[in-house]
Image (cartoon, rainbow, N blue to C red; front, side):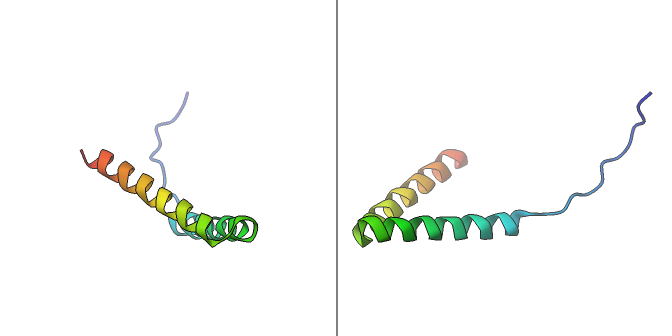
Length: 61
């Protein structure tokens, strides 16, 4: 028979995830810059910013 137990608090890995994701994004944009140039990085950054803003406005409604 299973016991009813209260789940314990888990560790918060949000900061570690955000740092890893930021580093991965930096490296990806660096490689794009090496192969296709700075203009492509700017276009990708603007498109990503627009997508994030769009997702943020959808979640607020």
